Length: 405
Image (cartoon, rainbow, N blue to C red; front, side, top):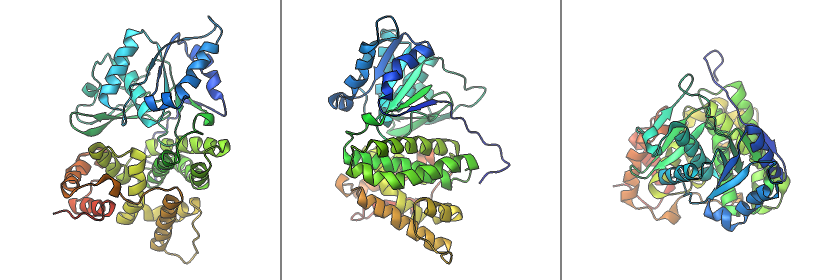
């Protein structure tokens, strides 16, 4: 853990939590100075009635007393594709929107961060901002983006509403690219558990594992601090306690609320302890190549990577095990505790109905060969490059019936 080396921690988003907190959104925008709000979401949430629930709030606001909802943009694809970002930014300009309301999971939240960045910098193509696949902007280059921005997450997974990271899929090079800027996060995050109760069990499970992966990779990071550890450990405790419950009983609003807060804390720890993230490295590469949902990819890779790169997790494994309520004795050595911790994570996979591999994607030998350069070139590999042999070995375990020639 870092103690003397300079570190950064900037949770700049105001956070409002609780049932029906969506009702205060027009007033929040009014306070931010917005007059013409664009709501951005996706077709699935439109079908689920979530978009209507949020849009109605603006219609119930007395005329002239708050901002107007001037448009709804719903053509947002999985993985926050560049084309979605560009189309949404064009629409925002056409309707002269001066405020952005993101309602959705990680793809929607990241798309809106890309839209905000494109509008602020006058870009017609977000790919222009990330020519090499990764850009990190800090002070003084990073500066405040004066576009009122509120995010309402509908999954407890990415925590993207408060993170300074936008992961945007570049269709041309088949890579998940990254913009990191402390002002990308929403000005205000509204955690309304009522909007997550209808989330299907499978999506609830793998988005929950995304949050768990954020927290565990943050805790294991060589650049973790006491501040990031506090967020990571509490996120892990809440996920271990609540994830099986919300998968089994999606109507449990209290458990849904705690999962939203755990997701937010997990990404906060992850964003400011950002260093070695091998699980995300694999998940990004496989997600970009085979369009595997990000949370599902993290869920499959998490226990396998922990076993395959034990040296990253061993130094703080006892604390991690305690957070996951793993039974350990004072006589257990670090290796034994790691085994028990991985076993607990696999039990959590089983309880939540998640697969242990990607058998359902029918990947071929040729597909697995393609993953080696994809994992090596992904921006997430910068701080912990992995040898080809290790990438191959982990690949065989997620597609166990295939052998790389």
